[in-house]
View 1 (cartoon, rainbow, N blue to C red):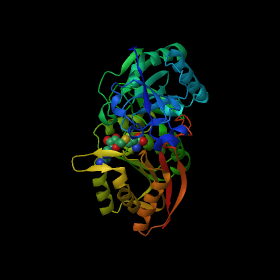
View 2: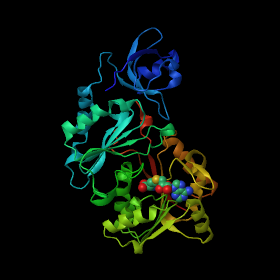
View 3: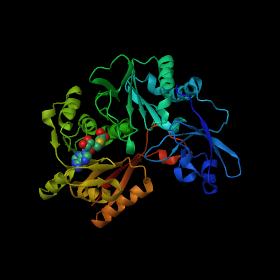
View 4: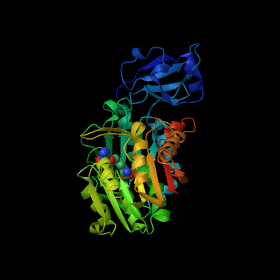
Length: 400
Ligand code: SAH
C-alpha cells in the first residue's frame, strides 16, 4: 500500500452541527480549504474552527461529496485489522442471509451504513463483488481483498470501479482473484433463479435492493393480473410476477440486450418466454402506443433509472416522473396497482409522494397508497445519514 499522509483540515462553523451529529459524508463546501488536499486517499483530521477534534476521514471524490468520515478516534489506523473489524461486524449483521437456502445473493457491506463510505460488497453464491465509488478508497483495495480472502473463504472476488467522473463505471477486467464464476452464475432470491454475470459491464443482471418488492409482487399482487413492467432491464420483476400467477407479463426496455436477458430469466425459472411479451422499445413511445390503443394493465411497474439519455431525449426522474406516472395511470385498470419506484437520492419519500399526488390530481383520478418500501435489511443504513436510504417504492391502487 502507498504511504498515506494525514492532513489537518478545518470545518466551517456553519457545518459544525452536521458533523457533531455524525454525518459521515464530507461536503466540499463544509471545508475551509479543500483545495489544499490534492491526492485522493489522503487521510484527513477534521477540526472545528476552534480546534476541537471532529473525526478522521479520507478524501475521495464522488458525484456527491469530497470524502467520508470514518472514525471519531484520532488514533484510528487504517490497517488490515481495522477493515477486518468493520467487515466482520457487517458480516455478522447478515448472518441470517449467510445461512439462507432460499436466497444466495445479498449485500454484505453497505458503505457508510456499515461504517465506511465509498465502497460496497455484494455476495453472489460464494463469490464477492466489491464496488468502488471513488479513487481514494481504492488505495485500500489490497487490505480489503485480503480481509475477504482470510475471513470469508470466497470462491472468487470481482470488482466494479465506479470512480470515473459522475460515478460512471470504468470498463475493465472485473475479475480480481480466486476462481472465475460461471457465466451465468445462478443465484437464488427467495427460491427464484437469477442469472448473474460478474464480468460483463457495470451491472450484473439484478438489483438486489428490490428483493422485498419482488417478493411482495409475487405473493400479493400478481395472481390473475396482467402485468406491465417498464424499464424492465433483465425482467426480474416480470419473472416474479409470472411466478406469482400473473395472466401475462409485458416487459419493455430500450436496450437490445434486455430481450435475451429476460428470456434467459424466464427460461431458468421454467417459464416459456414465448408465453410472455418482451418489447425492445423506448418506454415513452410505448406509452403513446398503449394510450392510443387503450391498452389496460392490472399491475404496472415503473422503475426508471434516475437519468437516461436516449437518441431523442434526456430523462431525469426529478423533472419527468410526474409525466411518466400520468402515462401509467391512463393505462392502469380501475382497482389496478402501480408500483412506483425510484432510487434517486436527492429527494425523499415525502417528496416522491407529492409527485404521485400531483399526477393523480392532474388527471382527476383517486388513489390509495397500499404500502411503501425502502432499502431492505442487508442494505444497512446509518441512523445518522438517512439520505443513505435512497430507495423509495410505493404501491398505489387506482380507485376511480
Ligand atoms: N427496473 C429494473 C432496473 C431498471 S435499470 C429492475 O429492477 O430490474 C434501467 C433500465 O432502463 C435499463 O435496462 C435501460 O436500458 C432502461 N432504459 C433507459 N431509458 C429507457 C427508455 N427511454 N425506455 C426504455 N428503457 C429505458
